[in-house]
Each structure stands twice: as C-alpha cells, then as structure tokens.
Image 1 (cartoon, one colour):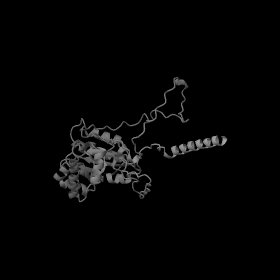
Image 2 (image 1 turned 135 degrees about the vertical axis):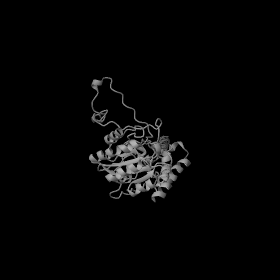
Image 3 (image 1 turned 60 degrees about the vertical axis):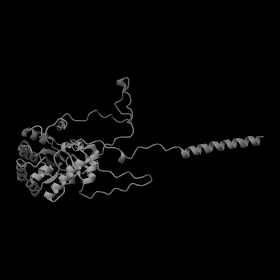
Image 4 (image 1 turned 90 degrees about the horizontal axis):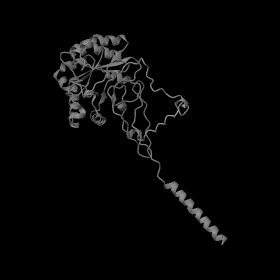
Length: 344
C-alpha cells in the first residue's frame, strides 16, 4: 500500500514538471517595438535648421536572424552621411549659401549677376524651367560665372496638389532644360512653396536622384517689397551653415543685395554654393522618430508643493522649463502658403 502511494506521488510530480517545462518552451515571446527604419518620420518644416525628416534614407531592416552590414566610414573631408533634404548645414566656419528662386528674369537677374561678380560671390539659382528656356543666355552666364543652377519646377505649382505624373513632368522637363543649357543635370530640387510630402519626396528621389533644398533664413521678400526690410531680416538671422532664400525676380530684392552682401561679408561670412555647403556638412542631428509605444504617464504633483523635492526621481536636479536666454534673437519670419500671393 505504501509502495502504491509512493508511485502515485512520483507520477504527479512528473506531470507537474512536464507542464511547467512545456509552458516555458512554448509560451509566446514578448512583443518588441518595430525597428527604427520602419517607423514613420516627422514631416519637414522648411524653416528649421534641420527638420526631423531630413534624415538620410535608411536601408530596409534585416530579416530575422540576419546581421546588419557594418557601416562604411565616410572618407576624410566628406559629409559623414548624405541626406535626402537640407535646410542648413553643420559647418566649422562662417560659411553661408545665398540662393535665388523663380528666375531668371531678363530685367533683374543680370543686375544681380553683376553685383555677385563684382564681389567674387558664388550663389545657387533655383530656376523655373519655363523661364530658363525663355532666357537661355542668362543661364549660360550663371554657369560661366561659377554659379550653381538647380531645379525649382517648370512653372511653380504646389507639387503635392497635382498628380504624380504631373509632378514627374515638372521636375523631369526642368532637369532636361537645365541639362541642355548647361551640359549638366541638376542635383538639387527646391519644391515651390516648400510644399512636399514624404511619399512624393521619396518617389522623386527614386526617379530622379534629387536632393531637396529648403532654407533656414527667409526674408519674405516676395511679400514685403522693401529693400531695407529684406536687408534687416537676412543680416539679423544669418548664421553659419545657413541657406538664405531670396528671389531674383523682384527689383526690391536685387536692390537690397549690395548692402546685404557687404554687411554679411563685414561680419566675416564667406559665401559658397549649396553643393559646397553640403560638402562641408559635419554632422547629422539625431532624427526624431514617431514612437510605437505610448509615453509614460507623468507623476501627479505632490499635494503640498512645499514638500516637493527640487530633484528629479533619479536624484538629479530638475531641468528648467525653458533654457532659452532672454536675449535670444526672434525666430525668422515664416511664410504661409495658404494665404500668400505670388511666387516664392
């Protein structure tokens, strides 16, 4: 009888152990967040120094069980990572890129070219294909003087508001016109109004290999036709690595340029093309990635504020709400394409 009870106890223990082992072996693995490469990026704002979606295109995430190839170090003197879009660059010196949109204008652009030539300054012109073909001699003069010619579409539509095929034609026809006049297909596109979506940008990059150029200094010269106002906005908001937006089709903008260029030069700025500025780029800020998990809930404030500690939960001092100095410059004025008039 004792032997029978002993056998039954042994069998029960064995069954329990088997069940435990089965549960440990076959229970589902805890869920993990998606790789960063598959998560959506924040959309770009044209006037930021480096907007969130200005991260370089990432390769697809490796399949399960496969290792990620080691990154190849960037050669000395080149940018550590090529980006899809820029609004400025991280540079070691006081370098700045002047860019001019919507031309050429046969009345104003030659006047600007003369000003630039007198000062030995190189700029980047984002031209409309329709105007480039109407003034081929001006485009050739730009190239002869060492300026850079880039794509600003054929006739300035908001690209996200037209069909993909129509957007392809806007960029493709302008690339072809510039290449015919200069012998070189343009590397850069500035979308009219700065209007772009991540999906369309990815499509145009895949189709044409374009890099997208925005800006970090905007004098709103298309809106406020006042040479002194344009001068003040550019000079007060200039910074190393800036891409300055202006329009060579407006007489007031061209009128402002001699003093703008001379005052920036007096401040120590050196003028480069967009290509030269990008070649100097030293770093890529950490991109902001949309999280797939909810943010942790904030702890409720203590009932008695006097008893609250000035240190954080981990013992470190709490950060101030704002670290912005009182003397900081005001943000550069920004444009609103929904209420604006005219080209920019």
